[in-house]
Length: 278
Length: 243
Image 1 (cartoon, rainbow over the protein chains, first blue to last red):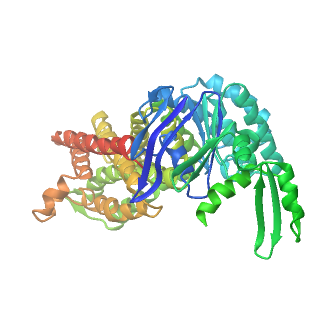
Image 2: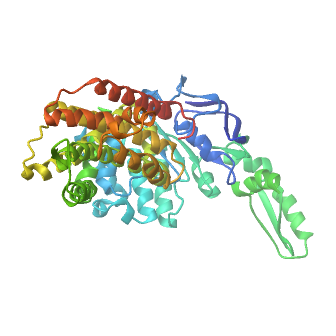
Image 3: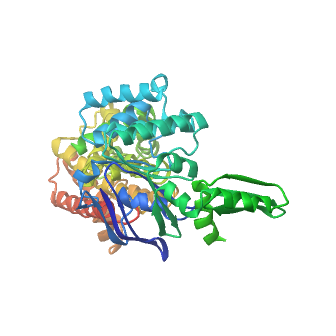
């Protein structure tokens, strides 16, 4: 279990994360959603010990996390938003370096690298240095690297950024499989449909503070599962209804171009987070 | 174990960039030897100036080799490639990362210094470079590797490391008992310069090379620098909130 207790992080007077408390159960697939600058990456940064909290604590399975806790760090793998890899190393070297940093025997590193490269379709490119890889291949390599050490917790900061639609779906399937095998996953993403498709629970974050925490289905239900979009001169205006009949009744009273559809997590995001920004 | 990982990483880097590393290590000291040793022919204390110059150039080459092997590389890994993030995240104890960098940097410095010694070997100077000289040069490299770590953590952008080199490493290369004795520097400044690690290294290595009695207190001075700089490096990796 991951537990954040009143976590706060300030950078030269600017509060990036402001008193976040959260529990993520073992085996959960949890999503952290928020606009740019909401504090998601900073939160992941503190969970990975890249950043130290200004105040508050992080517990993993009830034990306080710090940069010195090798035993806890061994359980965690992180896929950062940026391609955090040496540009002059080839793929095999990237994997071996990672494995060595996690004290894996070289034989095991090589065997597992074979499996992961075959799975990710990277085998043919393994001698290429990182600087010669496309963005999508770098992402795949980062996933392989994160999985090499067989972590218990996977922290993903925008893992599908820069991936094409097919690669993204492949990644979703992989993450689902890993979660089904018991891996605890914390995901931040700009793709709301990604969170809706994958996460058992999501938290809406804005200006460093945590808002609602619930399952996507509950959040949608709470807003109203039926959405009516009306095209007006200043853009689309959406209204949400708990009952289909109410939505249809509202729709029939409108004169312009309008549609009835299912509410999505993106609607919840726009309503809860977007409106607080405007 | 973590130290071995860092040594492996630096070894791969060395193999990959072997020719570039070797050329970079050779070119400046070679110029010094040609210009000051052969070009401007002179003598010092009745001996060819080259005999005075070689121990100094070897010392400054280990300094440059070690500092450059660590500072710029770590700076790029931290600020540009973000590869350093993976080290922080990993369970490798961060003190082992620091120790590995210092050890690897010191070895790179020794390699660079060794190249110069090989280069001047055919001249037959009769200068002695023994195990003690190598230990001192290794320590010198370790000090400047540790300095490289500190500088790379202090750097806020890619230009900061070359800037530091310009303001601190280059003046040391010229002033610290390398091209002329610190005895010729006016009092006040002399004591300060003589206390710098490169001055200590050059002084001891030169004394050993000419068979004069060497005051080995300088080893303690080098160890003190190494201890202090390592402590600062450890402070950064364990305590700095935003690396």
